[in-house]
Image 1 (cartoon, rainbow, N blue to C red):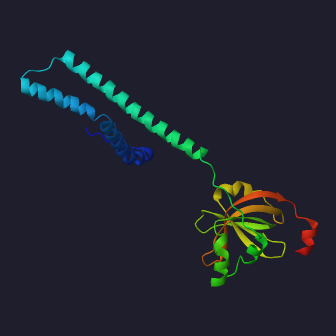
Image 2 (cartoon, one colour; image 1 turned 135 degrees about the vertical axis):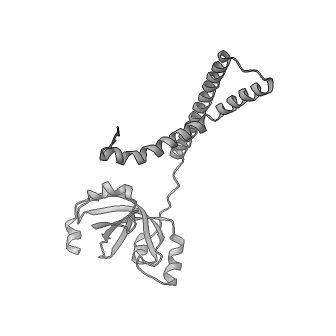
Image 3 (cartoon, rainbow, N blue to C red; image 1 turned 30 degrees about the horizontal axis):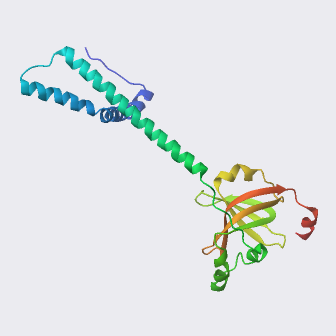
Length: 219
């Protein structure tokens, strides 16, 4: 009599993945309790040297005691690892933020925003890594090519258009902005590397308010 076993499609799809995962789980378990092999090997060596078999009522308490000790040791290692991770995280949270030094004469710096050349770089050098306050009319946002940043287009009161770089963590806040709103942001001055001598990165939105009528006439 021939038995024809057929698996349904979900089971057939699941088996190739379940077997390796099971083997990995077993390997991890054996590595965590590798000390039990030492106890088992010690019993075998003792029996081989003494030519006597260890009584069963001694073997199982010995194996069980070793299992309990190894389990406690593994738990303590995991607890210490978690405690160390929590302490490290708490230290990072309590770490004081670096003092922000704001650049003087931000208007003149923004005028050199898109300039290129050796002279422009020399004039910018003293302001690298300092912070600047930017205010203007919100025009729109776009994700970077790699998707790791958000660029905001802002039009200053003199009509100049600049780009502010925000982290993706600010996405939810930036989505609430409407075209034409007057925004205020603080940004860090960085080297532009080809896009202009200056780049405004690590920006943080401070405030946003509707377009002012006076500014609308200028624009």
